[in-house]
Image (tube, rainbow, N blue to C red; front, side):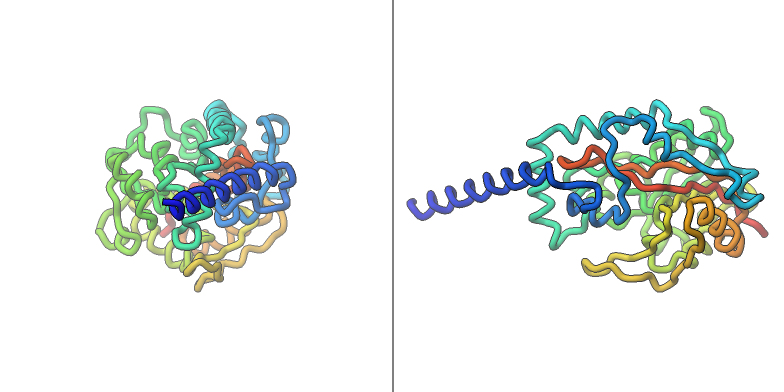
Length: 323
C-alpha cells in the first residue's frame, strides 16, 4: 500500500511540475520558436501571432498584380477576410483559452508523439481543424452559385473533413482519401465514401472536381499525383482545386524523420507572386493544366495554449485539364 501511495504521489508531483513548466514557459515563447509538437510537424514557417484579426490579417490576402505574369494576372481573384473566416478565428481563440483542455492536449501529445503521428493525435483529440477557404470564397473561385450541384468530387488527404464540407455541399457523391485512421473515423461519421490512397485513381471513376489542398509539397511523387488527377477528371468540364503553401518547401515524413521527396519540384522565385507565376507556367501547364483562377488565402489551423491559431501563406489554384 505504501509503495502504491508513493507512486501516486510521485506521479502527481510530476504532473504538477509539468503544468507549472508549461505555464512558466508560455511567456517566453515568441514567434521565432516552434511552440508545440503539433506546430513543429505541421508548420515549419509561421507568421507571428495576431491577438485579433485586423489590419495585419488583411495582409494575408495582399497581392501585387503587377508582379504576376500576364496570364496569371488576368485570372487573379482578390480575396478578403470575410465573416466565415473571422468565425473560425474566434472559435480558435475561444478553444485556446480552455486552459485545462489545452493542458490535457499537451500532455497527451507529449506522451504519444514518439509513436503516433501528429495527424492521428489530432484525430484522437478532435483538435487541429484546418481552414482553407470559406463557402463564399470557394464559390467565387469556381464561379458557381449557392444552388449549383455537380455529380462527384474527391478530396485527397481530407483530414477531419472540415474543408471537405465546404466543397461537398455542392456534389451528390463525395469521396475522400486519408492516411490517418482516427481522421478516417471523422470522415466516416460525416458519411463520406473513403478510397485507398493507392486506389482512388484505379476505380474507373471520373470526378467533376478533385481537391488537392496543401498536399503537393508533402507527397513523395507530386508529378505522378498530378498525372493521376488529370486522368481522373471529367474531360473538359472537370476541375482541380489545388492549394500550395508558399514559399514551396517540399518534404515527406518517413518513420518520424523528414526527407526530400523522390520527385522534387523546384519552384523559382522569392516572392509569392513570382512563385505563383512559376507554378502556373512551368509546372501546371507542362503537366497539362490550364490556370482558370488563383487567389491568395491564409492556411489556418486551430492553435493551442501558446497560440490562438497558426497561419501559413497559401496560393489556391483552379486548374482545368488541357488536351
